[in-house]
Amino acid sequence: MRSIATAWIAVLLVAAQPACGGGGGLARDAGADAVADLPADAIQDVVADGIGDDLGEVAPDAATDDGLDRDARRDADASSDVTCQCASNADCAGAFLALGPCERAVCDPDTCACIRASAPEDEPCEDGNPCTEGDACRAGACRPGTNRCACATTLDCASKEDGDLCNGTLVCANPGDSGSCQVDPATIVACTVLLEPCRANSCNPVTGKCEVAVVNEGMPCDDLDPCTTGDTCVGGECTAGGTKACDDNEPCTSDACEPGRGCVYRPNQDPCEDGDPCTVGDACAEGHCVSGAPNLCDDRNACTLDHCDAATGACVHVPRSVDDFNPCTTDVCDPMTGQVFHRPVNCDDGLACDGTESCDPVTGACVSGTATACDDGNPCTDDACTEPSGECVSTPVPGRACDDGIACTDGDACNADGTCVGTVELCCGDNVDNDGDGLTDCQDPDCASDPYCNG
Image (cartoon, rainbow, N blue to C red):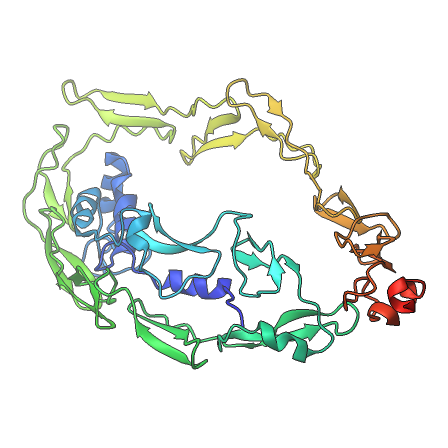
């Protein structure tokens, strides 16, 4: 029986990995970022429109509508709660109960969490079948190499078994002249994936049964309670490490953490200072410091940045910079929406087999791609790239002379399957069917004139 890595198991296990932060709140940070990125005059317009009036809370987050984290200052506070599972790939050595022959446990630099990743293409691997040679990783799976185990019936494959009751039983595929021992997919034990960060379900190779085991002991996890931090796996359970402190550094809100919701920042009506010398009589409303009698200086052109000069009180309209300094894009700003577009230069010639064309980032000129190389290394096929898919197609060439690598055969030629086979038996006393016709030694007509058979 052999080991098989299934990509869908890897996907589910990655989904179960804890995200950095312990106590959750990513959606709320997204809302806060959106508010923090608005110009000062735009924020004032939002407050003046009365967003969130019916809830009695700060303008609710667009994704959750629950009045959670709202501005950039709250993001800075939330970042202090981040708990990383790893800093390098070495930290992920024991993150998963089992990895396939073409899987690696690596540290995701964006989430600082351990994830499953595919091994490099063409890296040697072991598919668990002792009958194959030259196994290599392809798209995250160990692809078998050349099968060296010939068989006439499934009984011929019994001696090749490895004693593993989980990874499938060898059967004789294409029994007869061209039979080979292959794993019967129906005999592979597939265990139900547990969508839990602290436990995993895998097959015991001795019993052939699925068993649940504790994993990621002491590693970060998420107990799905937004009011806890520092969650870790303890004895197969995701256990909270502490209580989340909610402080958005906003004087116009009263802060608390509510079970099932996380941090909630309820507005107050205290006096405040918006820090803008062009406004007076600032006061808290709807959780924000609202300026009194502001000079918005709005020229109704979304492609300019408008503000009141702190020294003179004059309106200043600064054109937004839209140039990305990339000669391979055309940069424009929509004066109605303020959206900046960097439209890439299209260098595609419409052909798949001549490679992917690109734009030279220095000159802006289109550069030709690299043509697809279609050589499968098989002398019994003609290989070519096809349009419009760009896929390589290998066509068998029956009758082409070749060398099957067996010294005891002659007349080697390619068959209709694209395989090099010998047609004449040369060794008539080795008790081996070298030419694969089902006849051994003196049973083969090719040995009729051999002295061994006439002696």
